[in-house]
Image (cartoon, rainbow, N blue to C red; front, side, top):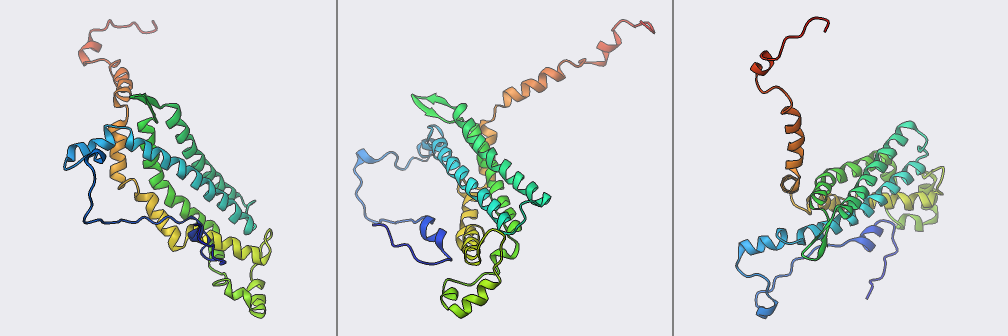
Amino acid sequence: MRKRRPACLTIRCRADLDENDAVIFFDDVKIPWDRVFCSRDVVLSNKMFHATPAHILQNYQAQIRLAVKLRFLVGLARRIAEANGATDFPQVRETLGQLAAEASMVEALVAAMEARGELVNGYFTPHRNTVYTAQVLTQQLYPKIINTLRDLSGGGVIMLPSGVEDLLNREFAGYALAAQRSPVFSPEDRVRFFKLAWDAIGSEFASRHTQYEMFYAGASFVTKGHAFRTFDWARANALVDQLWNSYPRAIGEMAHEPARKVGA
């Protein structure tokens, strides 16, 4: 049964979109052996993720999710600039262009995972190194994008009525809304919009999401280790070897070359 949506300005994202994780501990459970994949076998437990496509598939869908999430945040950035009447400032357009490029980069990485994927034991598997490349980059990218939206918002997300209760009193609402000016929003719409912006970038909900995007795949040294392990080093080294092997191997080779006449 869908829970009733609260009529409030301050927790819309948390009310509709939050997904808290939970750990349930059962101390007395009977599991039939035909349902057990692994028991007391550390080596097999590790192989379940990396000797099969499991780890790649779960992180592939995570990048699809993140691509949509970044598209939302970039759209939010554009709306923030419009609300502040700053869209035509050269510095703001530069910032929005950077955000657009970063969101497009993640979408391009998702497309590359698919285009470079292959069949593994009859199942399509996205390209491993491209998945891990996306993880390494987006762990760094997400908090950067959030901080950029904070810069664009300025004090707009702070100088707001504390809650919908402030607007229920007609006399107080007049004072509160008089300070809410925007070239594109009415005073009440400006309050509603910046409440949404704060919920997405500055609230406890937003902080938890930032921490999640930075660590859901493990610490950065873990994802960078995956990128190191799956990169085609042989192909990269071959380019280096091809070039440096074209250099003379010893000074003696140069000494035995026939002398050239001046002007020849």
